[in-house]
Length: 390
Image (cartoon, rainbow, N blue to C red):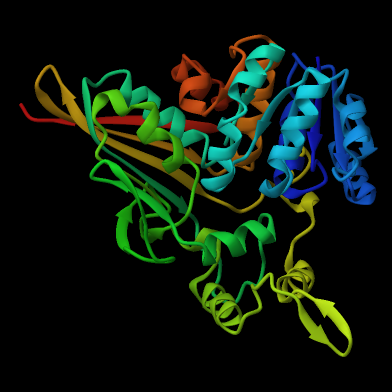
């Protein structure tokens, strides 16, 4: 089995590549990236004979198709702006596709390619990461056990960094978009816009996280879950996170920059040169992005210092009685689900365990228990709590 990881030199792509090299079902892992030096650094850190490095420029459609043509599946770990272009390349190459999310609106556009993927006899799974990804599978677990659903509430709790830590742990463009674009929620049977960083509430996670302040953020789970389980009468669905894994102090600094227009995509003339403030901001922020190799945990190294619990609460009825399911997926030993989940999903696709077409995770994997149990190999555990009246 051969899997191509586009953006494999990046942080989440490198984690996906690491999991694939450790999977006995996989024979070859192609770490494909525009930055070959980054990709090679990841390959050297992994030290696996399965790994091959190749440059990939997604602006070259023909070359991208050639890269994918003999692969069994593709993990697209690049920034979500490329999702539709990579899906087109997979269609032409006849290669299964998965990604880490489309930030709601791109995901909805991707779903429109369903019939073409069916005709091609290949599958695409959208939003297979830490979140989206895990919450979708958690929600499917609960939905399979409920007759009706009133709400699906998702909380992504991340161990807060020190207040003075200036670092970005995933794609800078996605971070800025999540901070500045209006979150979408599903309430009273319809999608609604809310303000960024709004509707704060304290939520209790497992130790050592404890109580964390959570706020709304634009995310892909909300784009699909209310529709996937519409027949159960879903009335509410939202996604909340605690400052995207950054400190509140760093988020405040970025908010100020955005308020001054540095997140704008409008061209600005500076001494006769046209630039977008957003591009300048991204270039400056790159200096605060840790190397991808810092996220890997080979046997001879200490795992990164992170703790994360992804919680989905689903409330509804079963046999006329009110029931609430709380599913919490925890990781703290280096195998961040954002990389492991798409790697595992791509293997399932390559094995033919996902039917052709374009699917959100909750509809792609008919056995969420088996999938979540498989993550335990990487010390990612899911606990289920059921609350109901006597």
